[in-house]
Length: 290
Image 1 (cartoon, rainbow, N blue to C red):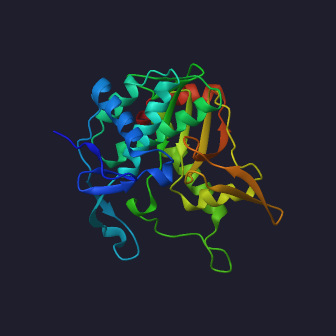
Image 2 (image 1 turned 90 degrees about the horizontal axis):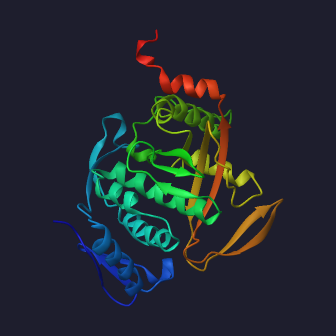
Image 3 (image 1 turned 90 degrees about the vertical axis):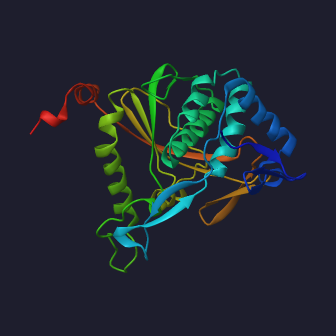
């Protein structure tokens, strides 16, 4: 038992009792989207088991105790259907990718598979070889085992006790970025390095990390994957046909228009580890170290 996409009208598709525009934001006809969906359903046993997930919201009103709510990852489902098909058309075996989607049990795993799909599409488009794995690491990129770790939206995470502010009372973005990157290294690196040799950290949901991207002239900044490298990145999706401008020295420079399927921008930054340290952390049971 699951949920199925269907055509609502000449502009939109339906999933459950929800209607979503597809022609304007993505530049494809609903019938084209349905051919993508039917390919996954008929040839890969693609199955959407839930369209709503229970979550705990944190924020100004709910505070540390949180507030129960629901979230609907429909955009993630739509992206997955389209980009997995495009990857298949490019000759990539997507069996393990769809299998991972079908095994997703909650909203956080759906976000993970969405990040994995978009990340691998972007790197494939930039000439890197991608292969999805059945277990352990998520995929290989140029034959290097790789994992994706996804930071959840601020509202789904318990807020920190204290935010670092500047002398003017504004949030200190530099401290926020350093704190977030150090958190990822301490909490997710230890599990990731045991099964992969390069780790990608999707920090798209971190507002502070997103602000970092405006400081660089490059609109798309693709980081080369290497062994023992951590890659922190930020992605953004633009509407089909939208002209993109980037401010360089107080001048708005046109970077052209974005067309489907190349709707995502990407900016990555990296930290390299000494190979001995990576291997040490991947082989030692840290719970026994005092």
